[in-house]
Image (cartoon, rainbow, N blue to C red; front, side, top):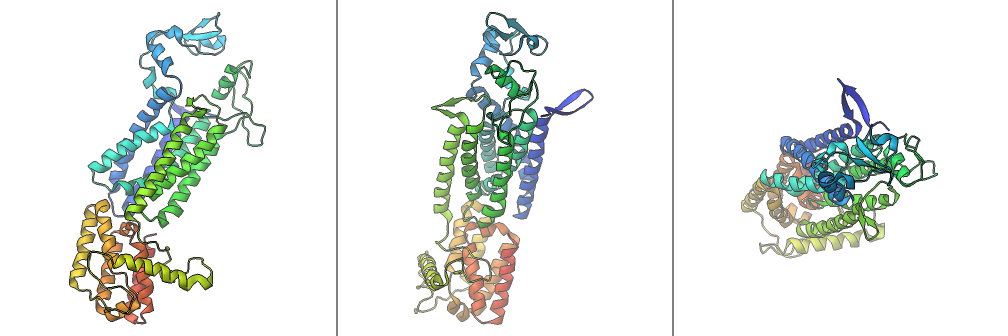
Length: 464
């Protein structure tokens, strides 16, 4: 425990805020790199991070005041300080807390009124969920104002926020707050005299004085920090590369953190408000888990492609870990589902892949594709569905591709240009169809088309 990391010119630098700032820097850097990679302005993310940091502190402080059980203390500090009871040792009442000792009650009372004590966040008292709510509200406002795709930015937050939170919890460890219950396990840690843990145990009459080390307690700060870094890694390296819709990474983060935090609350021992036998954080966690499920249901239903399995470019799309005897049936079924959806678009195309006449694509189809891509670049959230519709319309098998080799050569070149210019276009739901296109181009047996398939496969691989 080291509440102050260092001093410069007699100015103390609190460990918690320095670690919080470090987390902010790492999270913002990760977000800026992500924005540059998908062709967006990284300055928007930096500005967003600064605004969210400020609103996060405001939201975290307000929830502490209203939900952590100290609201009336802050009211009485402004109206009648004698009604505020600080259970501390008599020897510390005057020199440390600048209070007056009440011998009858054995507590310390503040002497002076302070109507702004509730706003002094630097004195301690911030809640993560309050910060998340405040930062999210600010993010929604700024992203809409800057016309930045909200759900894409939310996915960025899905891996950036837990990075920052992981650093913040290490700051909690150094500050000594957010500690856990007593334990005799090998993970237990003792905090030094006058630490929040020692003071809490003194108030509970578990210690006779705050001048001694606390009992061994669960280092829940370390537990949560490790959990947050694990969630960030899972969201960035696993979910993000496999997402089927914008918002999936954020929903995954919300759900994973809500469940993990709910469980960790049973090991926490610091003062927190609660209701119905649950802490405030557990109650909010239940709500956030519901929000994560709602986001998944709504977003996946709005933009998800046909129910086909994601595959690696250049590989048989049916080869996704299934038993070999089931491959042919699985592939046939999946392609039939996607084919039915593709043929149900606004154009009256004949059934794709069947024995009927081949639909003749022409320059008008390429113009539609370019128009959809331009609309997507202007407003990704609104233009994604149209772009996926055009790509799905071109979902055919190698018979149709061979019959229109010249057209599909130009179509593939256009898709490659789109992916290279805006890698985020693969996150619209079109990725599965493009992977099938790679496979079918290679299955035609035509050298020129196979070469274009390899070029598209390389462009898709570069987006990962």
